[in-house]
Image 1 (tube, rainbow, N blue to C red):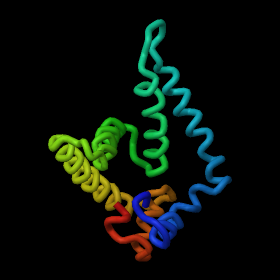
Image 2: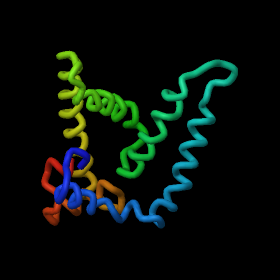
Image 3: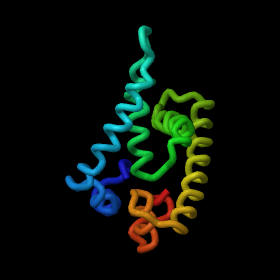
Image 4: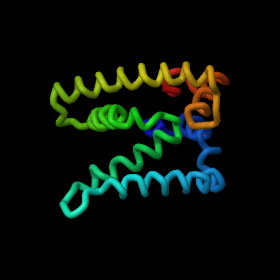
Length: 146
């Protein structure tokens, strides 16, 4: 969605719009607070630590994964895939980094394909379910859904 403009961007954004209304966002407050408390409780005591690694990285990852109903057991893998994919637009990317990004994309799409197949058997009301419904009604194509 972030790589699209105009009509395509609006069409894709419309799929997820209901999840980001004020009332829906309010419902997320307790989940975000719980995740925040969990991460803070794990901070090392009486020693220096990397705040990005301990809090600022894991919190948004866990929130987004929760929105898509991706279990916490996948956080490390999703984080690794995300780190590799973020570098894909870097013009100074090494051939190894480019291959890592391509591998991450392939693995991530395979995981999402499996997750979508599972969710079709047990639908819910998460962002992944919104994407599935948008695919089923042809608002999104397969690649956009993934």
